[in-house]
Structure formats: structure tokens, C-alpha cells
Length: 228
Length: 240
Image (cartoon, rainbow over all chains, first blue to last red; front, side, top):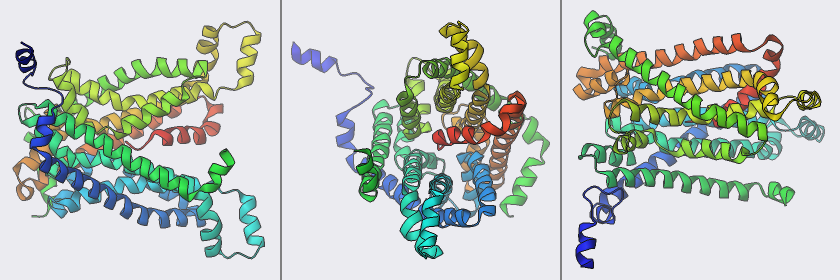
């Protein structure tokens, strides 16, 4: 009797299915790997471009306005439109997805890094100047460490939004976990597949965010001492 | 033929504008679903945000909502919601878009009430205002610039996100881009680029119009003082 019940209680289209995960573990793992590697590369490239830009905006105050305005305009452009602008030139491959997500991550990191630099107290800067620190030494020994919370906030926001944004890559067939979600939708609306892709996406964002938060704690021990 | 020339040719074909499913149809769909989504977002987020700001509780909730929605892919909501009780069609797309309108609306409503001058609040209390009167006659008017800033951020985001409704055949200008990718990258590049220009142009236009509206509804004395704070509040939730 109980065997029958459990057998009949298995509906055709559940929201989650271990069976699906077991049968498709290869596909799922490949997608997770592609998604994570796209995200990591994007944030890394974006940070490498964004930090020098933020320093330039900080050193030359007259450039800060234009840089912020330009990033604001870019941020208004919808992601699908950006795919449409880039795909005709770079074709349908990982390079197109990467360029789009790098651009958005860049904007987030630049804005937060500039905010971080602007929070450096002027007294500290003057004290460093009085001690004979040059521009570069001051940047690396004083200002960069003090701006680190802002920079890290930018990195975390950029990472989380990049994980979500990569899924838009399905428009050119390179969406990482988005590919799984979209295929589930097209395969007779297979709920378990859609849900697996979604949960893994959110989980990936959470894990990367926690990793960065942990790295931030290690890099800024003085903040913890102050709080405790 | 290079993509830009092809896009110009595509945009100059009048039938591409007036055909069923042409640009004008898609523009109408795009604006209709965006407007519905923003309206739904306002209905949900503003009362909650104003009330949380008034009582001074729930700041953590506002941040949590912003962070969680940032991590949820639009594609996931667009594909999941039609399979729930909402069913296929316009309602599920509108709800999916409204979810992404909530964080900026909520955060700005909350911040708008919180930043109201404590002295104004005390004065109103001293005059015998009840909590409800205080919210309606002091805090709400002072929060208007923030509500406008949140509305602008949310509306621009929804108009941008609405392009993704095309993934589930939800209509809108994104449909033009998707159809272009459906051809193949060489034959469709003109249409893809043209669709991209239309989507981006609409987003920038909405941004500019709402920036103007925001300026008009902000009382003159509040304009200069508010700009910095509003930016910060908007930046705190930007990123999706």
C-alpha cells in the first residue's frame, strides 16, 4: 500500500528532482564551471581597469565628474542592447558575453572605488604629505588601504550582479547556468531543470559574495578591532 | 555590408515600423508592460517603505531585499512565474519586472522619511500631530524628492529589463533583437543592431524625461541639498 502511494505521489513535473540532477550532472557541472569562470574573469578584468580609472578620478578632480557621468550613461543601456551592439562585431562566443559583463562590472567598481577614495579623511592625507610621502607612496601606503572598504563593496556588488547578468548570454547561446534555465523552459517547461539552474545561480552569487566578504575581513583587520 | 549600414537600411524600411509586430507595436507593448510593472512596484514598495521609515524599523529588511533581488537572474523569474498560478502571458511578465522595481522604490521611500529633519518632526509632535498626521503632512512632503529619485531609478531599470521579456515571448522591443539573432549573425546583424539602438534609445529617453520630472517635483530649496544624498541612496541599490 505504502509502496503504491509513494509511487503515485510522484508527479510529472516537480519543482525539484534529484533524479534530474543525477542524470544530468555532467551538463550541470559544465554550466556551473563556465558560469563561475566567466564571472571570475569578468570581475578580475573589470577591477584591473576600474581601479586605475578611480585613482585618475581621485588625483585629477576635474576628471571625476566626466568619468562618473559617463559610467552613469553606460549603466542606463540595457544589457540586451549591449549584446546587440557587440555581437555583430565579436560574433557569438564567450568574448561577447565577457565584454558585456566586464563593462557593467567596471561601472559598479569605479563608482564605489571613487566613493571609497573620497572617504579618506583630509587630515590623514595632509599628515602623510607632511611626513614627506610622495604621490605614489601615499597612494599605496595610505589612501588605497583606507579606500579598501569602498573598493570591496564595489567588487561584491559587481560579482553578485555579474552572476545574474551572465544568464542574459543565452541570447547568443553562452549563458552558463542561464542555458540550463532556458533549456528547461523550452523542454516542455521542465520545472526541475529551471529551478536547478536558478538555485545554483543564486548559490554561486552567495558563495562568491561570502568569499569576497571573508577576504575583506582579512585585508582590513583594523576595522574589526575598531568594531569589537 | 557592415552592420551599421544594414541597421540604417533596416530602420529606414517603413514596413519594419508599421507591420504587425513591427517597431510601433513592440514599442507599445514595451511601454505598456513597463508602466504596469512600475505601477505595481509603487503600490507595493511605497506604503511599506514609508511605514518602515516612519517607525524607524526595518532598515535591515530594506538592504536585504536589495541584495537578494540583485542575485536573482531576471531570466529565472521570467521563466518560473508563468509556471505558477499567474499563468502564461502578460501578468507573469509584469510581476517579474515589478520585482526588480521594488528595491530602489523601497530604499528611497525609507531613506526619504528617515532623513526628514528631526526638528520638523519634533515641532509637529509638539503641535499635537498624531503619528498618521505626522507621516502624511510632514514626512511625506519632505520625502517627495526621494520618492521621485527612486521612481526614476526603478522606471529606467524596468524599461531596460523589459527587453528580456522577449526570452519568453513576452513582447516588447527586445523581440526585434531576438528575431535578429534568430536569423543568423551575418544576415541579422542590421536588425540586431537596430533593435539594440531602439532599446537603448528608449532607456536613455525615459531617463532624461524622468530626470526632468524629478527636478520639477522637487521644491526649489531642497534641490541643491538633496542631490548628494539622493545619489548615495540610489547608488546603494544600483547594480541590477
